[in-house]
Image (cartoon, rainbow, N blue to C red):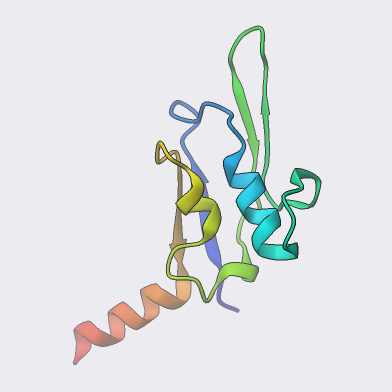
Length: 94
């Protein structure tokens, strides 16, 4: 099954949670972090950011750039699309 492998750099992430809102809106058409596949928490005392990402996200496998990655203004969230990688390899062989 095709999917997106998500990675987050917690040294860059500021805990704004824009990725959560983009995910929920893409999945259900509402901005509701409780239904997002991504969970971001920030300790307001220390500033530490904690992330719970799914190991892969099949919901966005047909996206060239998933909305959650696009919503990350500082580039802390990145991803690899298995379907796009396969297509790129096929193009190189030609």
